[in-house]
Image (cartoon, rainbow, N blue to C red; front, side, top):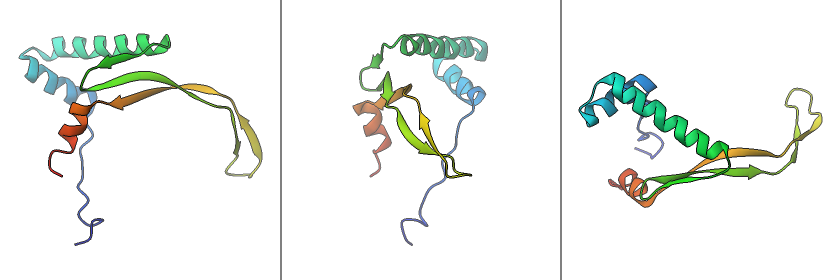
Length: 105
């Protein structure tokens, strides 16, 4: 079998499935876990929105990156257009997360 044929299917968790997993890990109700997940997302969003970053040693870092202005093309017409500079959220995985993902390689 080629490497392409061996490609594994991975599940994408929806928020409610993730909350259920967090509730199980916390030994808490789904409602408490949902509030915790919402608070985490809100806190990280507020930090990054203000241009700051948050670093979880070993897990990863949420930060803001900048994308320079550039020239693009309208795919339908081929017309050139200017794309404004923008800020983008970034996530850089930490060593522990990278090691966990690559444990079987």
